[in-house]
Amino acid sequence: MSWDAMAAIGQMLGSVAVLVTLVYLAIQVRHARAEAGRALSQGRGEALRDIFAQQRDERINRLTLKATAALRGPTHPFTTALVDQAGFTLEDASLLLWNQIAWWNYFLQIIPRVDELPAMERTQFEVPIRSQYGQAGVGRLFFETYIKPIGHPDAVRYIESVLAQPGPTSTGVKSP
Image (tube, rainbow, N blue to C red):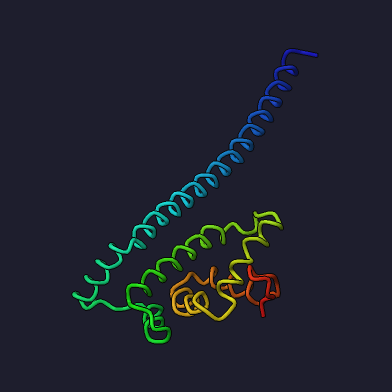
């Protein structure tokens, strides 16, 4: 075999090695982007949980309501319904609103990646959704007055699809 033939074979093997390396790097970049997106989403969720925890502090809640009333701000339909239909004080209804928003934020962190959950974890994730939004009560009121009007359409469709499937709830009662 001549040196020219060996050089051509070496160049061809080098080209294949470069191609394999580029494919590998492209895969690594894609995985790194996905992980960065997950980390950003998790950081956002943690920050929102902190904010919601502060808002559920009775003193902060009272100040927020006082300022909103003084500035003639609107009352959310959820809190209005609790005040009008359940006899709640505005402060208690507002605290419950923030609690429901915190739950919704938790669900929103998982919904985009629900297909990545193992079957057992997905079932355990969907049980509180059915319990919270599939039965009459505070959660259903929140779903109708907060999630449906302003929630992302994909998230609303996901919740509605979970509610449409029969399954267990945390109370042990099958969803309708």
